[in-house]
Every structure is written in structure tokens, then in C-alpha cells.
Image (cartoon, rainbow, N blue to C red; front, side, top):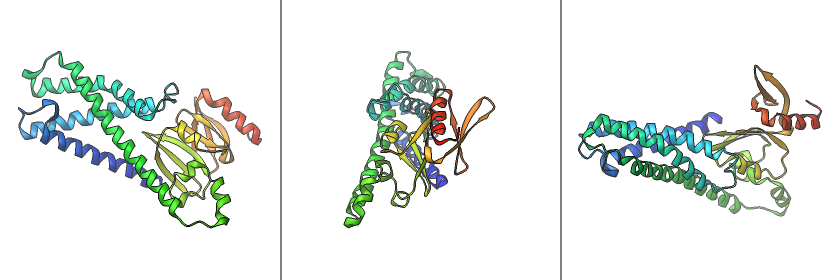
Amino acid sequence: MRENTGQNTRDRRIVVLGVAIFICVFLGPFGRGDDLNFWDRVAFWTVAISTVGIFMEICILATLESKWLVKLPSLIIIAIGSAIAGFPGASVVITLNKIFRPEHLEDSQFPELWLKVTIMGVLIAGLELLINARNQTAQEEATNREPKDDTDKPAILKTPRLLQRLPARLREGQVISMSMQDHYVEVTTTKGSEMILMRLSDAMDLLDGIEGAQTHRSHWAASAHADTLSRAGRRHELKLKDGRSVPVSSSYRDTVERMLNEKGQA
């Protein structure tokens, strides 16, 4: 299951990358490359979009995981990450201009390029956020349309909201752990795993009473499935009952130890 969800994420990125390159090659946005031949435009935009995309990925992910920005709306956080990535991104575009079209290069272009790169980052990441939100809404509406009898109502009321975000095949399982991967939270249950586009802090808010502890800024583990805390070199790891381990950072180690002490497993 983890391989399938990871493959779906990679496939989606490849499609987005291909569409973005296609649009830029044939439409030449921002007046870039109108004076270049076809293959020079392909090379220019392939390098530009791929490289800028890496900066966007790193910066947006860092801001989504930042504990100082956790209370802000996701779209605002994406805009902040895109603005930060816009600085190296604009530098990449200027460097490519020096290689492909130096006669059109102007130093005054940097602020304008930074703004345009930032806007593109917000549009692409925001579109991904919107698509995922609509998919989740459709799944929830489909669930609500399923026939339910009175005997099902108590169980539904006890189902944590996080599990309601998962496909039907996983909702009867127990949450084992959650880990951030790019903009997604990978929720691992006893029935399998699934990627959900949200911040880890938001996913933790939807646990609705499932006991556990955050072990790292990008990881959370359920108390019922936590086994032992061990040390691997300079790092600490929490062994889970399914055989996996999640990292434990120094800032969360005391919290993990308290959780294990309560279980008598420290």
C-alpha cells in the first residue's frame, strides 16, 4: 500500500511537470523564449521548471512543517514557502538567461522574476491542495450516502475524524503512526496506509482521543502500538509493534519516554 500511494504521488508530479513544461514551451509566459528556437525553449523551460520545482518543494514543505506557522491557513503557508523559494528560483531563471539569451538580460528583472516565480509556486501548490480537498469531500459525501441502520450509529459516532478521511477499506483499522512526506501525511493503520494532503498538526487534531505522542516534527506514533525506545548512534528511535521505527528527536524524547512509562515499557 505504501508503494502504491508513493507511486501515485510521483506519477502526479510527473504529470504536473510535463504539463507545466508543455505550456511554457508553446505559450512562452513572461516573454521568456520567444526569440529561441523550439529545442532551446524545451531545454530552457525543462531546466527552469525542474530546478525551481525542487526549491519550491523544499521551502513549501519546510513552512508546512514549521511550528511557528502552524496556526496559519495552508494557502498562506504555501505562499510564504513560495516567496522564500522565489529568491533562488529567480536566480536560476537569470542564470539560464545568461546562457540562452544574454542580450535580453537586465539586472532590474530580479524583483519582477521573483514575484512571477512566487505566483507560479502558489498557483501550482494551491491547485494541488484544491484537487485533494475536493477528492476528500467527494469521498466523505460518498460515505454519507451509504445506507446506515441504527445499529451502526454508535460506531460511526466513535470513529475519529482522521479515519473518516481514509478510504473505506482502512477505517476499521487502528492508527499506528503518521509521517510527513512532502506535503502529505502518510497515515499507517493496521489495515494499510494512505497519503492525505494536510499538515501533521492538522492530522493530530483529527485523532479524537487516539492516544499517542509526536516523536519528531514529522512523525507521530500511537501509544497502543509503541514498543521500545532505543538509540542508534547519536539518534533515538521508537520501535513500533509492526516492526517499523520512527525517529525521536531530542525535543520530543521526554514526551515519548512519558508515554512509554505510562505503559510500563520505557
